[in-house]
Length: 222
Image (cartoon, rainbow, N blue to C red; front, side):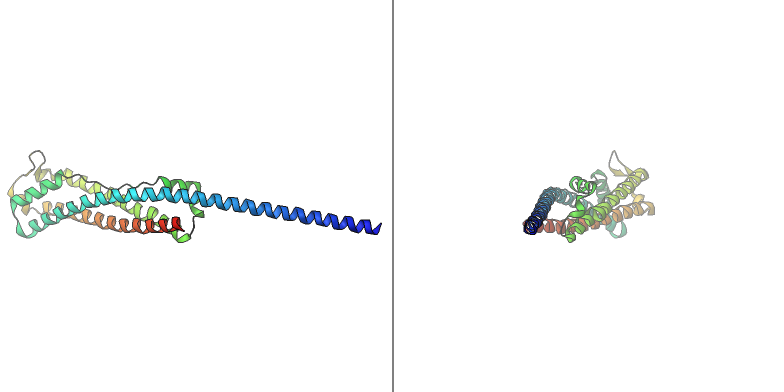
């Protein structure tokens, strides 16, 4: 009887051990599947983000090219007003500024916004990549967009007050006395400051995009 009891006890222990081992294996497989699922989701997100950033870079390059051309014109106009004072040249440069469109930057944020709203960006590894991506969108993009809005607002104010100096139909200054008017000089100074500030922030944002792109590509190639 004792032998039978001992045998049954050993059998029961064996069964328990097998069940525990089975549970541990199931948990391990589940964890492995979950890890693989998270990794696949991260790869999809990073590939989408990479495409967004490349498109952002193309757009930003185009905008910076136009803004730098405008800055060169405004800078030349400022120099003319402060020293050279060639009326015809000043009139020509001011007309050029008035007929040029003012493009500002709006990035593609779809992939990033989705990852934030779903909470998946919190699990993105390594943490240095997650921090760099968040910094780009929450700091650099935010500041450039905000600065662009301020820039547009200032240009609208300039446009509404330039009537006393400039005829937008004929693209001519109202008189030669305009170039000696301190209000006109201040007008050009405002445009110069807003334009140069926007270009500087744009260049910094471009550098940050390139940095994040490099990190993303490194992660995808791991």
